[in-house]
Length: 141
Image 1: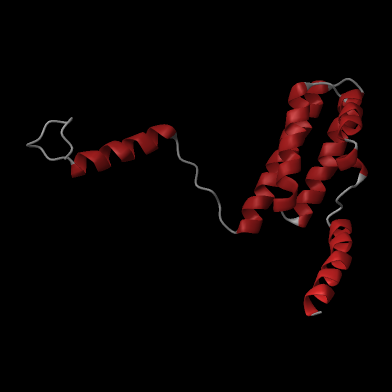
Image 2: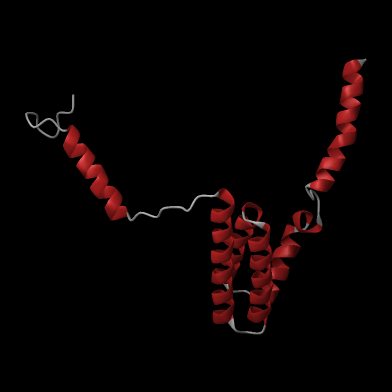
């Protein structure tokens, strides 16, 4: 009997969780229509890709940065709809940098960027330290 009541409670709670997550909203049920609406506003592939990158950052960033990035995103699509694609790209790049800065702020750590050359130098110096000078390079056992 306890199992049946738990199962019934789970069935009642599931639609409430779906509503909270906005599962089944118009954008998720009509993806083709949503995409066509975006393309009608601006059909530049780079603008659409920047939009996707910004939308991926929005849930991870701070609320203030998300609001600013969303406002810039909307302005950029309005600008692109007027025909100024270059200005739209600039606004979207700004929105992406705002969103990424908000992610760094929210996570509390600034990401230290290293160049591939620096990583290769570190790896080479580490392998030189562990190499045995008596053995050829191909004998590692």
